[in-house]
Amino acid sequence: MPKLRQNPVTGDWVVIAPERAKRPDDYILPKPVSKKKTLEFCNFCENGEAYNERIEGAGTKNVYVVDNKYPTFVSKEAIILDAGKIYYSQKSIGAHEVIVLKKHEKDLEEIPVSEIDELFNVYQKRITFHKKNPIIEDVMPIHNHGAEAGESIEHPHSQFFASSVIPNNILKELTGAEKFYRDEKKCIFCEIIKEEKRIGQRMVTENEDFVAFCAYAARVPFEMWILPKKHLENFDQLNSASRFQLAKIFQETLLKLYKGLNDPPYNFFLHDNLCQKNHSAGFYHWHLEIMPRLSRFGGYELGSGVIIDVVSPERSAEFLRKVKV
Ligand SMILES: [Zn+2]
Ligand SMILES: [Zn+2]
Ligand SMILES: [Zn+2]
Image (cartoon, rainbow, N blue to C red; front, side):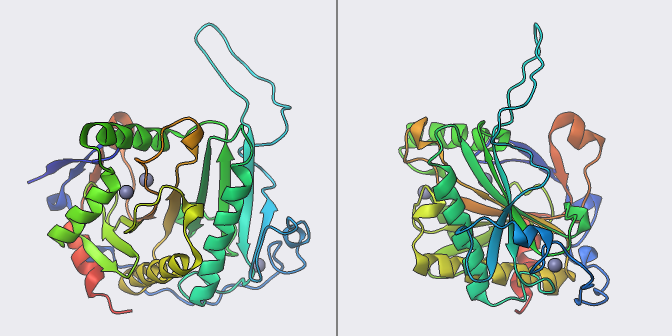
């Protein structure tokens, strides 16, 4: 039977309808032809155009940062606004950067854990940098892997968005988490961790400092959340020892996807709360969300905003737990 499930943070509904499809292993892709990527001229490689314009002091040994050539958010206020009686627009102020891993031919599951740690370190550095700007309301590092996930340049890279508005999904999370905190005097994310550990059915893996599990109201098959066990509001508060634990569990989850499903396309994004200046602190808990892109949305999803997921998170988790990495 299909089941409606509600995301405990945002209040969003999803329908888990496994009888419409499929078993988790129906999503295993044909074996990837070769992991060797084409090494023709690439702007992101050393001495390419992007590399030569990298932001001084923003990167680490194996990771550099450059402004996005076609930014979504800009620092200059040169945008003409249109508005009317009911229409409202606002300047798209902020920053949009590209965070590039120097090695062209290796994906995140193949590089040393220390280099994933460097990538997260650069996320932290960019968050710390941009949140000093009083106009910035949100920061969000994201990563696209595979063409179906919106990757346009095959050289591995993340993108960093800093915006002067709180994005829709973050606003929903902040509102929901704040309400829960007001009503229950507890952090909703800490409660989610407790509940996932108690139930165990959706757990994928854990280590000293982190848990990775399939989300209760997953929007897509194999959607995973990674949360720090210790309540921590901001990602840039994470110390280097814990950050290394994060790099480890993160690579383990990617390897499970890679080996279990044969290199599926995916997106991941980091949700952080920058808005202490506007929102009372205490109720938010940063986290990573990983969304494999193995299903497509149809008209009902677009029309209703209610997503139908045809693999239950419990079966997704069971499948991923069994993948040896
Ligand atoms: Zn390259
Ligand atoms: Zn918490
Ligand atoms: Zn989130």
